[in-house]
Length: 85
Image 1: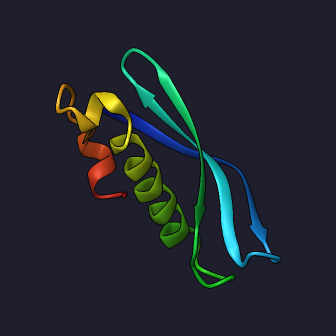
Image 2: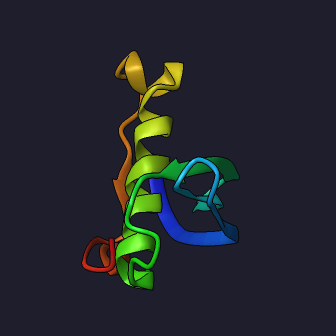
Image 3: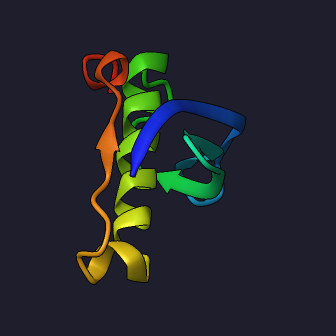
């Protein structure tokens, strides 16, 4: 399964739990996947590091889905995303 784009939306910092929260939308050739992600980084982490953290968390969640755990599908990032995330 090839991820062609990653978009972080509805970002906010949760002061009560001291974590960054956002929806991460992964665009695939045949569908989009919307995941709610939370990451633990310092409150004022720069945007690139924060987005990289969200991308890693989204990939971790996808890998727990049955089609990936079973080995039927493999998750890959498009070439233009590899250096970005």
